[in-house]
Length: 129
Image (cartoon, rainbow, N blue to C red):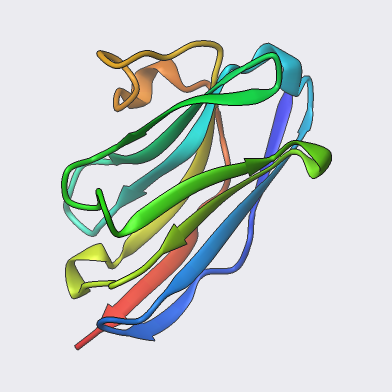
């Protein structure tokens, strides 16, 4: 079992920044992919940024096109935490953000929610114009 706990999100004006964190506990060594999905009202859950992990070190980072260059995913091995730094936020970034973990992922599968078997409860991010 893996437990994922997200930090509190927030409300920010367009152009601003927020950083989310996700603390993982439990059998984290069995999960080689961790990262973030988001879901806006009446939209499907979308992969935002995922980090593949090898020997507890980040291997590859994947981003959806709409956040590439604005969001950065990172990991702190010391405290099993994954971060999502979000800059130049836009109103369309408004969504519930979920931390997720999967036993594997790759360039062709990282965005597929069905391969992620552990999820946090979600944290709301609101960007107002």
